[in-house]
Image (cartoon, rainbow, N blue to C red; front, top):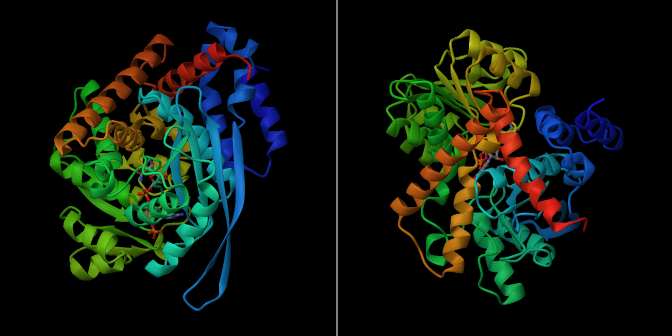
Length: 450
Ligand code: NDP
């Protein structure tokens, strides 16, 4: 049994009830063996056994009062996974599905993503099973304040810097930041995704979606192709999906789908980004509202999706951008995409493709950008926000966007060159995993057994 397989078998026996975490670990470990064969130091220092356990984690209860005066209770967590190359950094997710398995998968992935983007940040993730949907602003505020009365003990501008994720946007970051200041009397860059007048960075809102498209552009360029004129499928209708659609249009591509948890839109004229922003950012409504505003679009509710498939991946396209959530691209979806001629997949969501789907893309030899490389623009720009906060300065949109673009070019180059170094040209999964892992593992070895 190889070193990777041994560690994976041990984790499977130890955490049988954490399927998402095991899936994320398996995806990484599947690709690292060539590195271990080249250099024995990683096994000798038991890096895999160490890097798959968080440095530390916190679980706490959040109690708050709803608009009816009833006491509500939620469970919350923060996993500080690895700080070998910088302070912990990673988002907060508010969604009823949140549990330790999902947060550990996200925290584990975050280590390598952050390493890959070339900036000095470690990996972490946190969140709560609180469901922001249907809650009033006042309820969201009371929840965020109660959440922060626990979280503030564990975070800090050079300790652990949370950001947004599913269910956490500018509004939530505002309430969290207000509560942090009140509790600590510190005005510091402890959260990213802040508002522009109180320490936020221009282009942070757009960064993840834009970065996913910059990454796709690099993958296509390496194959002598471009995004211009491509027909694209995008899933999700949140922060990442909206700005992915916007940047695709700027590149002359045509996104024709978006989706939320209740259904999908197919708009043959190309997604109307202004309408999408109005529906999701202003009205916080379902995509049925998009259909009301753009009657020529088609709305397909989840109940009408083909068995075992997501509607958006059944639409024939040249390129696909999963931007909603984990495991939203099944093996069957991947096969349908490839069969319909899709030759580029760039992942905005974290771990959107099941392992069998990834294997389908790799086998087909299409341009496949795994999440930890393709969506790293979000966290990279968060780090740029930290940099601006630390220097008490603010850069222009153009400056931040140019830095983001450059970071995405470098991530692609790093992943592509590493894949080549290990004899797997074009396999950006292997390239991204080895490049991200090697830097963190070397730092861990240099810092000793702590
Ligand atoms: P948002 O909350 O803004 O949007 C999420 C979108 O995905 C919504 O349209 C939501 O629909 C849909 N969605 C969420 N869960 C499900 C589900 N279980 N089934 C179907 N649809 C679902 O989140 P973001 O856009 O910020 O995040 C999307 C993905 O991108 C996540 O995987 C996140 O981890 C990843 N990511 C985000 C970054 C960021 O900077 N925001 C950075 C890097 C990665 P509905 O509203 O109906 O729930």
